[in-house]
Amino acid sequence: MPIRPQHRYLYPLDWPSISEAIRFVRAKGQCESCRRRHGDEIRQLPDGRWYDTATNVWRDDQGGAAPDPSLLEMMAVVLKHVVLAACHVNHDRSNCSDNNLAGWCGRCHLRHDRPEHLRQRRLTYLRRRALGDLFDGPYPIL
Image (tube, rainbow, N blue to C red; front, side, top):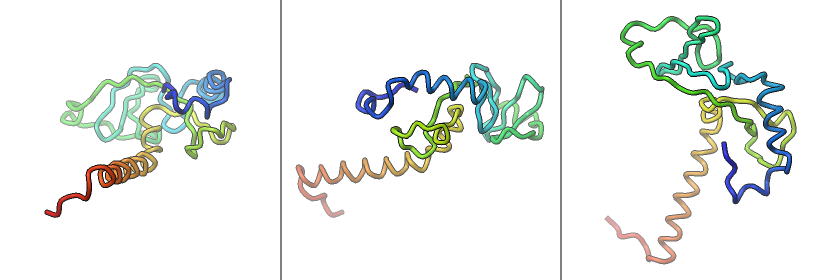
């Protein structure tokens, strides 16, 4: 995932090499959470199950074996492209120690970051409301 310009100063200068080492040396090119391989085109169901072509097994979100889908469930299969990212486990971008970084696919990364995204969204809404109060006056009472 690209680094936003306003956050670039939080990352070390050698971030590209750190990211590559996490994703391809330590994680060996597969997600450390669900074992999806970088660059694969996978078949995924809405409930998160995906088909592992290397072992010909359906897997769940944690990478364990999952039951085969029914014919009706198979109609909802979507093709997804897997991209690994080096992710900060505690959301502190300045902490690039090995135990704070993980090699996750996009799905696992978003699932891990969901509480943080909800917190940021709430702050954004509160900030917008405060700016509205400051410049537009109080909200009308309905």
